[in-house]
Amino acid sequence: MYGAQPTQSVSRLAALDCGIPIDSQYFDDARVVDLPGLGLSALLARVELPPQYCGVLEYFSQYTDLFSRDPTEVQTPGLLWQILANGRPLSPYHQLATILNPWGFGSFQFSIRVPEGAVLEMVVRRTASEVASPGKVINMVGGRLLGRYWYDQAYGATQ
View (spheres, rainbow, N blue to C red):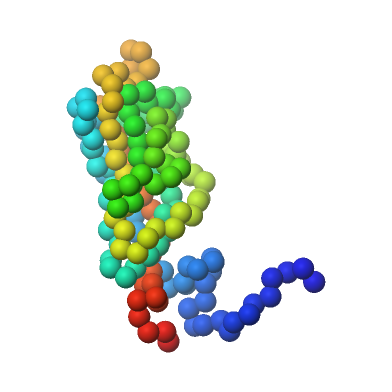
């Protein structure tokens, strides 16, 4: 037999997914804001994990009012979309210039571990005057972060 064999007994909080307890909680934050001025950034979503809690980021989505009118408008030249963990870019989602995961559409689930007590943020920075296809206008931008978090037993007694 080639399957993995468990080496420890399963606790009452057995993991559904490697290391994620079944009693984990969801986080979900989103904002839609006016397009920031040239050289400025806008906060689109923010999640602050409690101290002694860790988690995973599982989904994000992006929004522009232009894309909501015309779903072919995925290019956002002049906008830099970033996801940050504790103020540092979260790879591989740190230099996006397109709408990769549109708001309101299903996206591919991923699982990026988030450190204990982390602050996750999604921001967009305006790096150029033109932020859309020629003749098109973006007035509003938005973002959403969704994932799970749980108490990290490394900080407390085991049960």
